[in-house]
Length: 217
Image 1 (tube, helix red, strand yellow):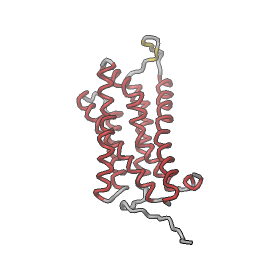
Image 2 (cartoon, rainbow, N blue to C red):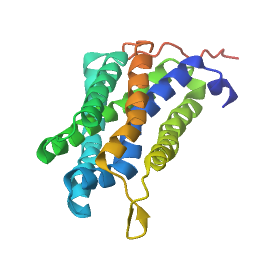
Image 3 (tube, rainbow, N blue to C red):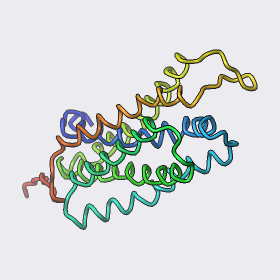
Image 4 (cartoon, rainbow, N blue to C red):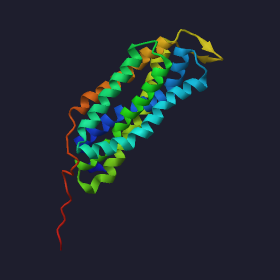
């Protein structure tokens, strides 16, 4: 584990991966439903259906991303492309109010597909490290991707509370769609940072760059 933690390449891959999971864990996992309810005046079940399309997109996109990466023989390229698409789509949600709900539902699915491209990071992390630490490397990548939700969910909450105007609905704080959008700038900055960092990833061409060398007694 200590050896894996000293690998700079593993940290870079893990950080890129965690920026790509942010929309799923922070938006679809918590703040997306109240945002859609505020933006479109929808009841919770309909808003939840729209936002849940991001999860369906993730489920469909993850195996497809792995297949595509193996098919084209590239790791960095699909990760970078997926991160860029995610930034564009999240930016559209933040900067363009009034998107038709049908279009937003499709965008949710597309964001899920793009974000699922982070699964390629597990293969990339294994290919740039010694096989003897692959288990620890995979654990680090997985831990940081999950951490993105633990970081972003409260950050967005703090930004919402900072804007809160005292409105209460059934005893709970209520926020406007514009207040959500301002808070979602943190999510947009998060994904944009990942896209920039993805340009620094090392391309392995789906080939392990390191091998364990053993000496026969």
